[in-house]
Image 1 (cartoon, rainbow, N blue to C red):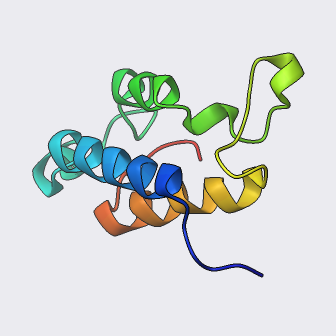
Image 2 (tube, one colour):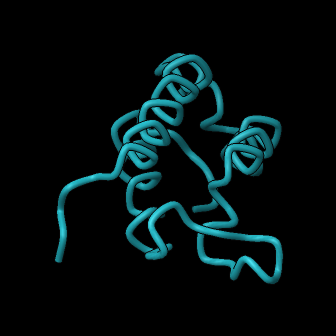
Length: 90
Protein backbone atom coordinates (compact mmCIF):
# COMPACT_ATOMS: atom_id res chain seq x y z
CA UNK A 1 0.00 0.00 0.00
CA UNK A 2 1.34 3.40 -0.97
CA UNK A 3 1.59 5.71 2.02
CA UNK A 4 2.88 8.76 0.17
CA UNK A 5 0.18 11.40 -0.28
CA UNK A 6 -0.28 13.05 -3.65
CA UNK A 7 -0.14 16.83 -3.93
CA UNK A 8 -3.94 16.85 -4.24
CA UNK A 9 -4.32 14.81 -1.06
CA UNK A 10 -1.93 17.09 0.82
CA UNK A 11 -3.93 20.14 -0.29
CA UNK A 12 -7.17 18.40 0.71
CA UNK A 13 -5.81 17.59 4.17
CA UNK A 14 -4.56 21.14 4.65
CA UNK A 15 -7.92 22.60 3.58
CA UNK A 16 -9.81 20.20 5.84
CA UNK A 17 -7.48 20.97 8.76
CA UNK A 18 -7.82 24.75 8.35
CA UNK A 19 -11.59 24.45 8.10
CA UNK A 20 -11.90 22.28 11.20
CA UNK A 21 -9.50 24.48 13.16
CA UNK A 22 -11.66 27.50 12.36
CA UNK A 23 -15.03 25.82 12.92
CA UNK A 24 -14.49 23.15 15.57
CA UNK A 25 -12.56 24.65 18.42
CA UNK A 26 -12.85 22.83 21.74
CA UNK A 27 -15.29 25.43 23.12
CA UNK A 28 -17.53 24.94 20.09
CA UNK A 29 -17.38 21.17 20.39
CA UNK A 30 -18.21 21.31 24.09
CA UNK A 31 -21.15 23.61 23.40
CA UNK A 32 -22.70 20.87 21.22
CA UNK A 33 -22.74 18.31 24.03
CA UNK A 34 -26.41 18.76 24.83
CA UNK A 35 -27.62 19.45 21.29
CA UNK A 36 -30.00 16.75 20.04
CA UNK A 37 -27.90 16.06 16.93
CA UNK A 38 -24.58 16.37 18.74
CA UNK A 39 -23.05 18.26 15.83
CA UNK A 40 -23.57 21.46 13.87
CA UNK A 41 -25.44 20.69 10.63
CA UNK A 42 -24.21 23.91 9.01
CA UNK A 43 -20.59 22.99 9.61
CA UNK A 44 -21.21 19.48 8.32
CA UNK A 45 -22.88 20.86 5.17
CA UNK A 46 -19.85 23.04 4.54
CA UNK A 47 -17.63 19.98 4.97
CA UNK A 48 -19.76 18.21 2.39
CA UNK A 49 -19.09 21.13 0.04
CA UNK A 50 -15.38 20.40 0.54
CA UNK A 51 -16.05 16.90 -0.80
CA UNK A 52 -16.10 14.83 2.37
CA UNK A 53 -19.36 13.04 1.57
CA UNK A 54 -18.67 12.25 -2.07
CA UNK A 55 -15.37 10.41 -1.79
CA UNK A 56 -16.99 6.96 -1.96
CA UNK A 57 -19.51 7.91 -4.66
CA UNK A 58 -18.59 7.03 -8.26
CA UNK A 59 -17.84 9.97 -10.56
CA UNK A 60 -20.71 8.89 -12.82
CA UNK A 61 -23.04 9.57 -9.89
CA UNK A 62 -21.57 12.96 -9.02
CA UNK A 63 -18.88 11.89 -6.59
CA UNK A 64 -15.21 11.22 -6.90
CA UNK A 65 -12.05 10.70 -4.96
CA UNK A 66 -8.66 12.35 -5.09
CA UNK A 67 -6.60 9.22 -5.56
CA UNK A 68 -9.02 6.77 -7.18
CA UNK A 69 -9.03 5.07 -3.77
CA UNK A 70 -11.96 6.80 -2.11
CA UNK A 71 -11.66 4.92 1.16
CA UNK A 72 -8.03 6.03 1.54
CA UNK A 73 -9.11 9.61 0.89
CA UNK A 74 -11.95 9.33 3.40
CA UNK A 75 -9.44 8.15 6.01
CA UNK A 76 -7.71 11.53 5.60
CA UNK A 77 -10.96 13.27 6.59
CA UNK A 78 -11.51 10.88 9.50
CA UNK A 79 -8.00 11.54 10.78
CA UNK A 80 -8.56 15.30 10.75
CA UNK A 81 -11.97 14.98 12.42
CA UNK A 82 -10.32 12.92 15.14
CA UNK A 83 -7.46 15.37 15.50
CA UNK A 84 -9.96 18.17 16.25
CA UNK A 85 -12.41 15.90 18.13
CA UNK A 86 -14.96 17.27 15.66
CA UNK A 87 -18.43 15.78 15.97
CA UNK A 88 -20.36 14.70 12.92
CA UNK A 89 -22.06 11.80 11.19
CA UNK A 90 -18.93 10.40 9.54
